[in-house]
Length: 384
Figure 1 (cartoon, rainbow, N blue to C red):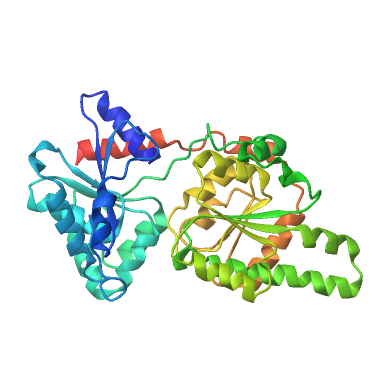
Figure 2: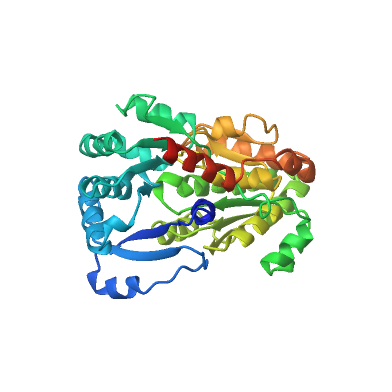
């Protein structure tokens, strides 16, 4: 959204702009009419069209790109009105978009964000993805680790692939006093429990993001309280009883995760907030004590940049670009993926630190902006 906005602003200065075609996968064809009526909730200047796209769950993963292609062919009546196609997701959307552009004589650029690269692990998908990459003018990766991963799977040579790091809106994601942030969320009572700690998760509730791993780690964290009870450590007990895990996001695992909290007997300390606006995410980041990203696979997760810009320490799986993103943050830590016990230890260590949140935020005040990313991408388009 932020990237599209910045690209549109710059193209508008030249008398152009963007049209956003958002493919919405749904095998429930009776819902398609309603999907077509959706409106952009953010009120962006550019036009956004929501296009229902048929797909086959699970068994259809190797050929759902065909449905993306068909949806674009139905949705775009006059391809000659456009100058090019930019596809910021590798598969299946990106493959469908690049092949659509090729069939209609339009130049295209495809972008790999990280989690989408896992599709290259499957031979049938890898073949069609590499075909699309060869047809595109350039393949844009958000970080070196994503580029390296694509090259290992047979992507075009390095001249074809270029790196453009993500941006962050530091006007929004910045340090603010916790009292102000709590009021911004609309729940000033968040601070009523004294010294309790808040662990924050922000992201899609999908397997690749590992929220189930975090719940397992959180159970271990809370169970440690019982051990301290036996040892008579009253101060630690009082704190950990109040400590909580706040989960922001929606996704296919939501119902299963809620059930998991009940089975693990941690449902009294895990709060599912749902999807919230960017300004509320920024506020939660200023209320929380640590952001936890337990992903199984990543690219260059923007949520890490946003947390650092807010002065929020991060514990993340050592996947994608996480390690390089956190290399200059002594307040943060990476852990091996899918290791709940190590994740628990890292959370405990980070929560025990005394962090100057304002000073930490100021270190990232000059982080790359979305405008920087937009300018670099447009320059690539002009030169290729």
